[in-house]
Image (cartoon, rainbow, N blue to C red):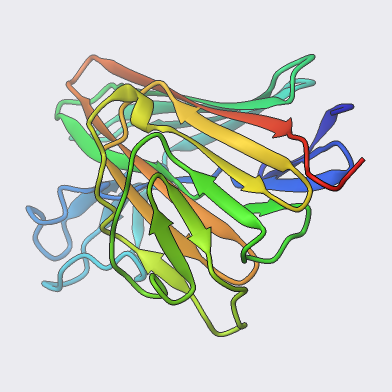
Amino acid sequence: MRGYSFETIFSILISSGFVGANTVNSMLNSYIGYDQAEPGGKFLKIGVGVLQRSDDNPYNSFRLYDINNPGEWKIKKKTREVQFIHILKDTDYSYKYIKTVKLIKGSPEMHLEHTLSNTGNKTIETTVYNHNFLIIDQELTGPNYKITFPFEMSGKGQGIGEIAIFMGNQIQFLREMSKSERIYCGSITGLRGTLNDYNFTVENLRTGTGVRISCDRPLIRLVFWCSPVTLYPEPYINIKIEPGESFRWIVFYQFYMSEVQGME
């Protein structure tokens, strides 16, 4: 690999091929306080701010809610990193969230460094995952991709057994996907509860370009999505922060080139 460069906060370029690595994460259960709030009351959405509950209906992640307090955003840029800072001050929930997208000098690596500090009066408890919309060398989703985890897995879902299969510790593709097809498996089993579970690779078998994704926190859930143009293995970790405490986690992306049979 000759080098890499920072293109956008969503992707990087390595060598002669393109590897998209989406840096967007989401707090899945971060509608904190929604169930306790009356219509017109407030609840917390980390990374968004304090929102207002509009009615008696259950929380819907695809619905828009009025923002009562958006907090304050700051962005700091350096040569090899961009830092996003969200500061929220409110009556119940307050926090300072710092996310840094960092390219490592002299190495084909990208780090996503996060620190969430609870500066409010109530415990912050949620889960967080990365979307990981991966595209390697503009390869369409299909048999030229291989995804490998450190544990044997199984699961059922849309497209499983028809388009893709679980084979030991790997996800393999039986064929390419049509434009209207999707794969979704939200109940992958086999996790061992160890730190090493969050350590997997996605590789383009045609070009030998791949990425290893790992984290310094244990994997507690794994969801797998696919569209015809991108793969999204979505790993989850737990977060619980008492008032006055902070929680830090780092997701590591290591890009590599392996030998491909038949290629010089």
